[in-house]
Image 1 (cartoon, rainbow, N blue to C red):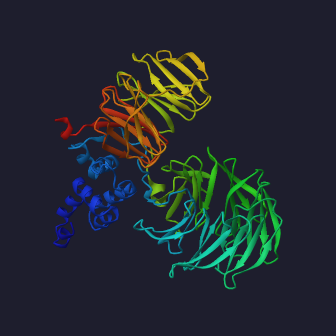
Image 2: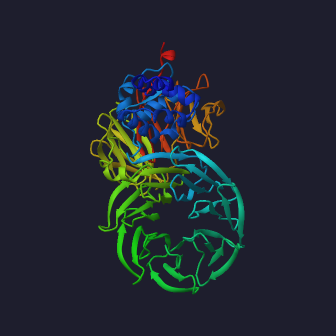
Length: 613
């Protein structure tokens, strides 16, 4: 492609760069970063849009087993982009593959720039550098990662021994502080020298860390105390006492004259740093303040509590002036550099942007399958970074979020734990976290009925052979039988355990293991006849094709894999954004349905020409 561009043949270069076969080749031999660098050189608007779309899902294009499954993953994730739609539609595969029948429920939000994938544990805190060119993230995996925000690459990894509970960057961007939460240490890392230059130790749990606006001191939550630590002398100069519980939130005012801390009695304390005393107390009327941020001008504070409310407080009067309420608990809050908007991260995985003047949500960003625990806004206010329990960090374009058409894809969305397909293949039943069973029309992807009655999440569903009845099992340990014509429960059995999947002829079963393997056992002897390896994490769901020639499994690594059980061969795989919890083959065996944290996936199964003939 470079040769075409150097020769002035931009059209030929673009045709090559956007060819899915070339993309698969470059991903296999150079990775996504190199491919994106090439795409960025293409001059047309379509090429730029394609590059942005590709970047949104680039984290899913890592090598996969079997290697030929990468082509199917590429086509699945890029099917929604105009630049590739015709190529995806003219699909053909020499190998077995899964192809989208429905639009993906986890398609990236238009405002998503990219996903930073590397942490092996939940992301607890993050911060942008003063110039916005890099991002520091701390995780439960015991590492702090430095990311290039343009390329998405990790440029440095700071090892630690325990969970990272806080990350803060100095105003000049030359050093950062991070809290090794369970060891009672705060470490100072020199960005240029790439080494630790100081360590603050304590016998008690340390969680929050904040750096003063001039970079001369740190505020460190040390159990029930807050310590002011001088960077130059590396000594504690002030200790603030009087809290009733361990500190989890510490923030410093823009002028550095006061700090705000949380207390588990539902109060926020404001401290005069010079006077070493509390000057005001905000009564939040909640047992737990989870997050807090101070406005750029220092006149108001935003707090988020475990009741799902974000409150705005006037610092001068110590009164709440507004309450922002969402449908989920708010875990983290951040205020824009100009103070006109607030971003919140919730337990339901959604990120909301609020207008401070109107106190209304202007944008809701979806994509995180689990709770959003960390958040940072770039110094210029153009980008938002969010981190979740799965260890992934998402970068968002704030301007694109505000101008994008409300995001609503045509595939069903919702957290589901179980799935079944009617014998005639026209309906799908899903069991959801809210205790409801939803019936979907396969042709339209729309809900046609909702069956209510379970008081716990529904984790198993099955159609009768004639499709007139449905059996469901919930976390309430009830097995309910439903008449599909009347949509009413005809019988309820209590104390029922989970059912076991079995082959159609009843001679063997397939079960998933915690080590990621799928085990095939004879029903007659109870002995294992095959062990199918390939999953990187525990198996959540297993499904056997109607003719018994294929086994599909979904694991915690957010991947569906399909084996030929007779040959013991892994024949194809597919990646998703969210965790998958149930699988079901279509009656003909020509399709596979999967459900999980982000909704329903319906794929066509292509046996591949090598096997078809």
